[in-house]
Image 1 (cartoon, each protein chain N blue to C red):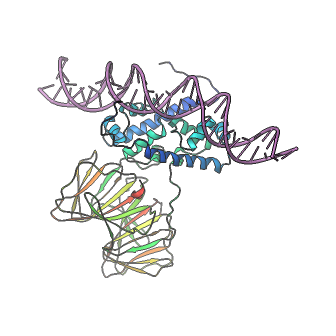
Image 2 (image 1 turned 90 degrees about the vertical axis):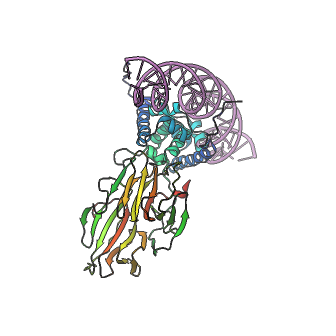
Length: 208
Length: 208
DNA sequence: GAGGAATTTTTCCGATACGAAAATTAATTG
DNA sequence: CAATTAATTTTCGTATCGGAAAAATTCCTC
């Protein structure tokens, strides 16, 4: 029996990567066809083999960094171009009001969030109201971490912010915070009363 | 180590890719260290081997798409994060606190805004605190209009929002608003006392 | 400075990407 | 429709990636 990794092997092996690969391939093909090029033409420009591009476009194989870079050069785009989501458009002219307290509750392990404006899809920002119970028992198994940036404002009470690689920070009513959401973070009420916070994130999280 | 300087007229794809690889590796290492992680910790989170990450960080090898995706997931960033030009970009791992009232005042014709976190460049969101004087004389010569999206929360008092093509909306303390900033808009205090608002815009834009 | 633990680098071999050419499919022409 | 060409896909050998473990380095603690 092959000495496979322990039961810790949590991060998914291939399943999820395959679908992502297919998406990358589609994007690549899209860029090629948009220029009216054949595989051979792109092969000529990028310097790699026709067969390689063919397989990559269909998600049959996982290109190395070097080949992806060659392709980007050949097509004439920046590497980031391959990964920027294209669809998902915010409805132009949107205008919505949310009266106080009329929110959609959304409970997570440690917080109670209420997402504002759930009816507006694909917002560039996701504003949420949160309540942190006083003396809440926190599960410190892991930080929250996600792509994008985050803004926090303490509306009532006091909050202790735990951020990876940073000393805990105490925020009082009116204090605010701005940070890279990919840095692990956790919020907890710091006072004897419930804390009320406003959080605005970029990048709708529902994605994954 | 002897320099392998060869007077080749044609671009040497190998060397060019190598330098890019090194840059990618540096960025990867930067993201890891910003979180205070060891190779083993990132290996655990991403699901790939310590040795692989080590080689990748030093540009010794060219990761495949699959492994790069695993790394992005483990770190908690988008793939594009690896390739965004390092110059004009939001500093990865940013973390800044703004105590209440310590803001930089910025007066416009109709409002007094205080931009939060001016020291963080290229934020995806621009949070501002605003004060609307009671019974303020408004210049109704034109609406404000700019690219991006806008979120507004009334912290104190009441605000009347005038939006192009919409009837005026009265917002009380705790009410909020989300809309396309390209739709003309204006804010005015609606009560007998000064109103205090939080505004978060996307797209950092010079001027107001 | 001598252990000793933690972290990184190197080694080695199995797994996979990659390219040249063959095979297949699609498009074009007479 | 057959024949020819263009375009894409498949095959297969080689180069490189990628992971487990060993070796080396750095970091502590006494």
